[in-house]
Length: 296
Image (cartoon, rainbow, N blue to C red; front, side):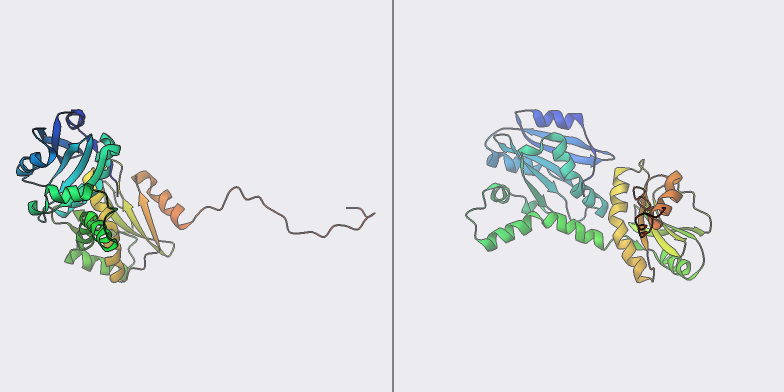
Protein backbone atom coordinates (compact mmCIF):
# COMPACT_ATOMS: atom_id res chain seq x y z
CA UNK A 1 0.00 0.00 0.00
CA UNK A 2 1.43 3.33 -1.06
CA UNK A 3 0.60 6.28 1.19
CA UNK A 4 0.82 9.96 0.27
CA UNK A 5 2.89 11.92 2.77
CA UNK A 6 4.84 15.19 2.84
CA UNK A 7 8.62 15.18 2.55
CA UNK A 8 10.28 18.11 4.29
CA UNK A 9 12.09 20.75 2.19
CA UNK A 10 15.22 20.21 4.31
CA UNK A 11 15.31 16.54 3.34
CA UNK A 12 14.84 17.34 -0.34
CA UNK A 13 17.60 19.96 -0.26
CA UNK A 14 20.05 17.64 1.50
CA UNK A 15 19.26 14.88 -1.00
CA UNK A 16 20.24 17.16 -3.87
CA UNK A 17 23.64 17.98 -2.36
CA UNK A 18 26.54 16.29 -4.18
CA UNK A 19 28.53 16.03 -0.93
CA UNK A 20 25.98 13.90 0.93
CA UNK A 21 26.84 10.32 1.85
CA UNK A 22 23.81 9.52 3.99
CA UNK A 23 20.57 11.05 5.21
CA UNK A 24 18.63 9.94 8.26
CA UNK A 25 14.87 10.48 8.10
CA UNK A 26 12.00 9.79 10.48
CA UNK A 27 8.23 9.89 10.18
CA UNK A 28 6.70 12.53 12.40
CA UNK A 29 2.98 13.30 12.31
CA UNK A 30 2.15 13.85 8.61
CA UNK A 31 5.66 14.16 7.15
CA UNK A 32 9.03 12.53 6.57
CA UNK A 33 11.56 14.77 8.29
CA UNK A 34 15.34 15.06 8.01
CA UNK A 35 16.92 13.94 11.29
CA UNK A 36 20.64 14.03 10.45
CA UNK A 37 23.13 13.98 7.58
CA UNK A 38 26.65 12.68 6.91
CA UNK A 39 29.05 14.04 4.35
CA UNK A 40 31.24 11.99 2.01
CA UNK A 41 34.57 11.31 3.73
CA UNK A 42 35.99 8.27 2.00
CA UNK A 43 34.73 5.54 -0.30
CA UNK A 44 31.19 4.15 0.26
CA UNK A 45 32.36 1.05 2.14
CA UNK A 46 34.63 2.96 4.51
CA UNK A 47 31.95 5.55 5.26
CA UNK A 48 29.31 2.94 6.00
CA UNK A 49 30.45 1.99 9.52
CA UNK A 50 30.32 5.63 10.59
CA UNK A 51 26.85 5.94 9.10
CA UNK A 52 25.69 2.78 10.87
CA UNK A 53 27.05 3.97 14.23
CA UNK A 54 24.57 6.85 14.27
CA UNK A 55 21.48 4.64 13.89
CA UNK A 56 19.75 4.28 17.24
CA UNK A 57 16.03 4.08 16.42
CA UNK A 58 13.50 3.22 13.75
CA UNK A 59 14.34 5.35 10.72
CA UNK A 60 15.08 5.55 7.03
CA UNK A 61 18.69 5.85 5.91
CA UNK A 62 19.18 7.13 2.39
CA UNK A 63 22.67 5.93 1.43
CA UNK A 64 24.63 7.31 -1.51
CA UNK A 65 26.79 4.52 -2.94
CA UNK A 66 28.28 6.79 -5.61
CA UNK A 67 27.56 7.91 -9.15
CA UNK A 68 24.18 9.24 -8.02
CA UNK A 69 23.00 5.79 -6.99
CA UNK A 70 21.13 5.43 -3.71
CA UNK A 71 19.85 2.66 -1.48
CA UNK A 72 16.85 3.25 0.76
CA UNK A 73 17.44 1.49 4.07
CA UNK A 74 14.45 0.90 6.35
CA UNK A 75 15.66 0.13 9.86
CA UNK A 76 12.68 -1.19 11.84
CA UNK A 77 13.56 -2.92 15.13
CA UNK A 78 11.25 -5.72 16.26
CA UNK A 79 9.99 -3.65 19.20
CA UNK A 80 8.72 -0.90 16.87
CA UNK A 81 4.95 -0.38 17.35
CA UNK A 82 3.02 -2.17 14.62
CA UNK A 83 1.37 0.98 13.29
CA UNK A 84 4.81 2.55 12.74
CA UNK A 85 5.98 -0.65 11.02
CA UNK A 86 3.04 -0.39 8.65
CA UNK A 87 3.71 3.28 8.03
CA UNK A 88 7.40 2.69 7.28
CA UNK A 89 6.42 0.04 4.75
CA UNK A 90 3.67 2.04 3.08
CA UNK A 91 5.50 5.39 2.91
CA UNK A 92 8.76 4.19 1.36
CA UNK A 93 7.51 4.36 -2.24
CA UNK A 94 6.07 7.82 -1.71
CA UNK A 95 9.38 8.97 -0.20
CA UNK A 96 11.36 7.82 -3.24
CA UNK A 97 8.78 9.29 -5.61
CA UNK A 98 9.08 12.68 -3.88
CA UNK A 99 12.85 12.72 -4.37
CA UNK A 100 13.85 10.89 -7.56
CA UNK A 101 12.77 7.25 -7.95
CA UNK A 102 15.17 6.68 -10.84
CA UNK A 103 18.28 7.00 -8.63
CA UNK A 104 17.17 4.46 -6.02
CA UNK A 105 18.64 1.16 -7.09
CA UNK A 106 17.58 -1.04 -4.20
CA UNK A 107 15.66 -1.14 -0.93
CA UNK A 108 17.13 -2.79 2.13
CA UNK A 109 15.18 -3.80 5.23
CA UNK A 110 16.72 -4.61 8.62
CA UNK A 111 15.36 -5.24 12.09
CA UNK A 112 18.75 -5.54 13.79
CA UNK A 113 21.99 -3.60 13.33
CA UNK A 114 23.86 -6.87 12.85
CA UNK A 115 21.89 -7.39 9.62
CA UNK A 116 22.89 -3.96 8.37
CA UNK A 117 26.25 -4.40 6.67
CA UNK A 118 27.81 -2.92 3.58
CA UNK A 119 28.43 -6.44 2.22
CA UNK A 120 24.72 -7.26 2.48
CA UNK A 121 23.76 -4.03 0.74
CA UNK A 122 26.42 -4.49 -1.90
CA UNK A 123 25.16 -8.01 -2.60
CA UNK A 124 21.70 -6.55 -3.16
CA UNK A 125 23.17 -3.90 -5.43
CA UNK A 126 25.22 -6.37 -7.47
CA UNK A 127 23.87 -7.95 -10.64
CA UNK A 128 22.07 -11.28 -10.16
CA UNK A 129 23.20 -12.88 -13.41
CA UNK A 130 25.95 -14.95 -11.80
CA UNK A 131 23.63 -16.46 -9.19
CA UNK A 132 22.13 -19.91 -9.41
CA UNK A 133 18.34 -20.16 -9.56
CA UNK A 134 18.00 -21.19 -5.92
CA UNK A 135 20.23 -18.28 -4.88
CA UNK A 136 18.08 -15.86 -6.87
CA UNK A 137 15.00 -17.19 -5.12
CA UNK A 138 16.64 -16.77 -1.72
CA UNK A 139 17.75 -13.24 -2.59
CA UNK A 140 14.24 -12.30 -3.73
CA UNK A 141 12.86 -13.65 -0.46
CA UNK A 142 15.31 -11.53 1.51
CA UNK A 143 14.36 -8.42 -0.44
CA UNK A 144 10.70 -8.96 0.40
CA UNK A 145 11.27 -9.97 4.01
CA UNK A 146 10.46 -6.55 5.41
CA UNK A 147 7.11 -6.22 3.70
CA UNK A 148 6.17 -9.82 4.51
CA UNK A 149 7.05 -9.29 8.18
CA UNK A 150 4.91 -6.17 8.37
CA UNK A 151 1.96 -7.89 6.72
CA UNK A 152 2.27 -10.92 8.99
CA UNK A 153 2.47 -8.84 12.15
CA UNK A 154 -0.47 -6.72 11.06
CA UNK A 155 -2.65 -9.76 10.40
CA UNK A 156 -2.64 -10.78 14.07
CA UNK A 157 -3.20 -7.30 15.45
CA UNK A 158 -6.36 -5.30 16.02
CA UNK A 159 -8.25 -7.90 18.00
CA UNK A 160 -11.74 -7.13 19.26
CA UNK A 161 -11.75 -6.43 22.98
CA UNK A 162 -13.87 -8.72 25.14
CA UNK A 163 -16.62 -6.05 25.56
CA UNK A 164 -16.57 -5.44 21.80
CA UNK A 165 -16.80 -9.18 21.08
CA UNK A 166 -19.80 -9.47 23.39
CA UNK A 167 -21.34 -6.37 21.83
CA UNK A 168 -20.99 -7.77 18.31
CA UNK A 169 -22.64 -11.01 19.37
CA UNK A 170 -25.54 -9.07 20.90
CA UNK A 171 -25.87 -6.92 17.76
CA UNK A 172 -25.91 -9.94 15.46
CA UNK A 173 -28.56 -11.63 17.57
CA UNK A 174 -30.73 -8.52 17.93
CA UNK A 175 -32.59 -6.01 15.84
CA UNK A 176 -30.42 -2.88 16.09
CA UNK A 177 -29.80 -1.14 12.79
CA UNK A 178 -26.35 0.33 13.49
CA UNK A 179 -23.21 -0.60 15.36
CA UNK A 180 -19.87 1.22 15.35
CA UNK A 181 -16.41 -0.11 16.18
CA UNK A 182 -13.33 2.06 16.71
CA UNK A 183 -9.60 1.32 16.75
CA UNK A 184 -7.62 2.39 19.81
CA UNK A 185 -4.19 3.50 18.49
CA UNK A 186 -2.56 3.00 21.90
CA UNK A 187 -3.67 -0.58 22.52
CA UNK A 188 -4.11 -1.48 18.82
CA UNK A 189 -7.40 -3.14 19.66
CA UNK A 190 -10.90 -2.72 18.25
CA UNK A 191 -13.31 -1.32 20.81
CA UNK A 192 -17.08 -1.17 21.13
CA UNK A 193 -18.73 1.98 19.83
CA UNK A 194 -22.47 2.61 19.86
CA UNK A 195 -25.50 0.61 18.77
CA UNK A 196 -29.01 1.71 17.95
CA UNK A 197 -31.56 2.32 15.25
CA UNK A 198 -30.43 5.87 14.43
CA UNK A 199 -27.37 6.55 12.35
CA UNK A 200 -24.41 7.44 14.62
CA UNK A 201 -22.87 10.91 14.61
CA UNK A 202 -19.80 9.79 12.61
CA UNK A 203 -17.52 12.53 13.89
CA UNK A 204 -14.37 10.47 13.34
CA UNK A 205 -13.03 7.41 11.57
CA UNK A 206 -14.82 4.20 12.50
CA UNK A 207 -16.18 0.93 11.20
CA UNK A 208 -19.95 0.68 10.96
CA UNK A 209 -22.18 -2.37 10.77
CA UNK A 210 -25.52 -1.45 9.23
CA UNK A 211 -28.60 -3.58 8.67
CA UNK A 212 -30.55 -2.31 5.71
CA UNK A 213 -33.08 -4.01 3.42
CA UNK A 214 -32.24 -7.43 4.81
CA UNK A 215 -28.51 -7.05 4.20
CA UNK A 216 -25.59 -6.58 6.57
CA UNK A 217 -23.27 -3.83 5.30
CA UNK A 218 -19.70 -3.32 6.54
CA UNK A 219 -18.70 0.34 6.16
CA UNK A 220 -15.22 1.76 6.65
CA UNK A 221 -15.92 5.41 7.42
CA UNK A 222 -12.73 7.43 6.94
CA UNK A 223 -13.08 11.19 6.36
CA UNK A 224 -10.49 12.86 4.15
CA UNK A 225 -9.30 14.81 7.20
CA UNK A 226 -8.23 11.60 8.97
CA UNK A 227 -4.48 11.72 9.78
CA UNK A 228 -2.26 9.59 7.54
CA UNK A 229 -1.21 7.26 10.38
CA UNK A 230 -4.83 6.57 11.27
CA UNK A 231 -5.73 5.98 7.61
CA UNK A 232 -2.97 3.38 7.33
CA UNK A 233 -4.05 1.75 10.59
CA UNK A 234 -7.73 1.53 9.62
CA UNK A 235 -7.01 0.26 6.13
CA UNK A 236 -4.78 -2.47 7.53
CA UNK A 237 -7.28 -3.32 10.24
CA UNK A 238 -10.27 -3.75 7.92
CA UNK A 239 -9.71 -7.31 6.71
CA UNK A 240 -8.63 -8.78 10.07
CA UNK A 241 -11.70 -7.18 11.62
CA UNK A 242 -14.03 -8.59 8.96
CA UNK A 243 -12.50 -12.02 9.51
CA UNK A 244 -13.22 -11.77 13.22
CA UNK A 245 -16.79 -10.65 12.56
CA UNK A 246 -17.36 -13.56 10.19
CA UNK A 247 -15.98 -15.86 12.87
CA UNK A 248 -18.62 -14.50 15.24
CA UNK A 249 -21.36 -15.31 12.75
CA UNK A 250 -21.64 -12.08 10.77
CA UNK A 251 -22.83 -12.74 7.22
CA UNK A 252 -21.49 -9.57 5.60
CA UNK A 253 -23.27 -8.96 2.30
CA UNK A 254 -21.65 -5.71 1.19
CA UNK A 255 -18.38 -3.85 1.93
CA UNK A 256 -18.37 -0.07 1.48
CA UNK A 257 -15.91 2.80 1.91
CA UNK A 258 -17.35 6.19 2.85
CA UNK A 259 -15.46 9.50 3.09
CA UNK A 260 -18.09 11.97 4.31
CA UNK A 261 -20.99 11.75 6.76
CA UNK A 262 -23.31 13.60 4.39
CA UNK A 263 -22.69 10.92 1.74
CA UNK A 264 -23.28 7.97 4.07
CA UNK A 265 -26.87 7.10 3.13
CA UNK A 266 -26.32 7.62 -0.59
CA UNK A 267 -23.10 5.56 -0.55
CA UNK A 268 -24.79 2.63 1.19
CA UNK A 269 -27.82 2.82 -1.08
CA UNK A 270 -25.66 2.81 -4.20
CA UNK A 271 -23.79 -0.24 -2.91
CA UNK A 272 -26.87 -2.34 -2.18
CA UNK A 273 -29.00 -1.09 -5.08
CA UNK A 274 -26.74 -0.59 -8.12
CA UNK A 275 -28.37 1.74 -10.61
CA UNK A 276 -29.41 0.26 -13.90
CA UNK A 277 -27.38 1.27 -16.90
CA UNK A 278 -28.97 4.56 -17.91
CA UNK A 279 -27.58 4.23 -21.44
CA UNK A 280 -29.76 1.22 -22.18
CA UNK A 281 -32.68 2.19 -24.34
CA UNK A 282 -36.10 0.61 -24.10
CA UNK A 283 -36.65 -1.88 -26.89
CA UNK A 284 -40.24 -2.98 -27.59
CA UNK A 285 -41.01 -6.63 -27.98
CA UNK A 286 -40.68 -8.03 -31.49
CA UNK A 287 -43.78 -7.44 -33.55
CA UNK A 288 -44.61 -9.44 -36.67
CA UNK A 289 -44.65 -7.13 -39.75
CA UNK A 290 -48.04 -6.60 -41.45
CA UNK A 291 -48.78 -8.33 -44.73
CA UNK A 292 -48.14 -6.33 -47.90
CA UNK A 293 -51.07 -4.18 -48.98
CA UNK A 294 -52.63 -4.04 -45.58
CA UNK A 295 -53.00 -0.97 -43.52
CA UNK A 296 -50.44 -0.71 -40.69
